[in-house]
Length: 320
Image (cartoon, rainbow, N blue to C red; front, side, top):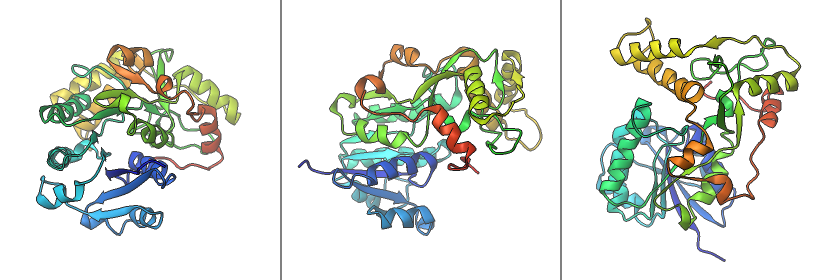
C-alpha cells in the first residue's frame, strides 16, 4: 500500500482541468485531490460535483503569492495549473507560492501542440516565460504538451450532427492536408497526467502525451467513412495564414475580432499544417519524453471512436 499523492489543481473546472480531475478522482486510493477555486466560483456545478466525489475544494485568490495561498499548498506533492494565458499573473503567483510551500513538483499550464520555444508562436513564448520563472526558482517541474485535440479537429457535418466551435477548430484543410499531426482526445489527458506526475523519470522534463498521429486528409476520410456523409473540403493556404499573422502582429484585424485572437489561431494553424511542428519526431528533437515509450500499456482512445461518439451525440462540443 503506497502513500497517497496529494495534488492541487488550479483551473480544475475547465476542459483540461476536468479531464485531470476525473482521472485522479477515479483512483482515490492513489490521490488526494484539492481543487483551488476562486471564491466567486465555489458555486459552479463542477466544483460541487468534484466535492461530492471526494475532492477538497479550497476557496483561494491567486493574484499574488499571499500567505493564505502558501498555506493552502503546504504538504502538497504536486501542483497542476490548467489556467489559460489570460491568467498569466495568477500562474506566476501560484509558482512563487508553490516554491515557498516546498511543493514537490509543479506542472505548468502547457497542454498544447509541440513546437519550438521561440519564433513560431506568441502563446508558446508566453508559456516559455512561465517555465523560465519556474527555473529561476529551481522549483521541480514537469511540462506536458498534448498535441491538438480530436475535439478541435473535425469540420462540421452537412447533417449538423457534428458542429464544432468554428473559431477554435481546424475546420479548413491547411496547405495540402498531408502533414502528420499528433492528436489527442482531451478525455485521455487525465490518464496520462495521472501516470506522469508520479513518475520520477519525468521530473524536470517535458513530456509529449498524445493519442494518435493523423493527417488532415486522413481525418476527413475517416469522418466520411464513419458517418457516411460527404464533406466539402475548404482549404487555407500558407500565404493566407501568413497574411493573418502579419495583421495580428501589426495590431490590425477584422472588426469585432481582437487581433490577438486571430493571431493565436493563425499561428496554431501554421505550426500544425504548414510547418509541421506537432509530431512525435519533432518533440523528441526538442527534448520531450514520449508518452508511448514511457507507458506502452496506456490505451489511447482511437480517433474513429471519438468520431462515433461525436456523431451519436455521446460527447458535446468543447467551448460550447
